[in-house]
Length: 87
View 1 (cartoon, rainbow, N blue to C red):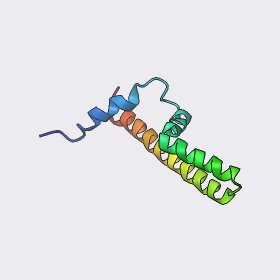
View 2 (view 1 turned 120 degrees about the horizontal axis):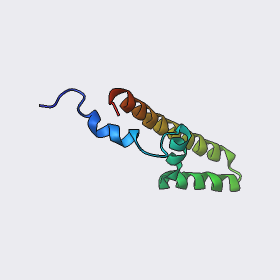
View 3 (view 1 turned 180 degrees about the vertical axis):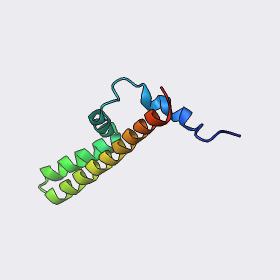
């Protein structure tokens, strides 16, 4: 039987001691390295090139909101691991 909170032992090292990952902006920008996100950004660029600004804005808003949600979740996990697990 495992003790309560033992699952954090797996998560804590991932978020606590990684150099270069401490900055929130770095976490946000890292979300845009995903090939699917890059494809969506290319589609938004193509929509702008074809003068279909409505589609381009919709795609860009979706990509931005998705990036903010994922980076916020990772930042929250990093802060939680710092508070729940002594380093």
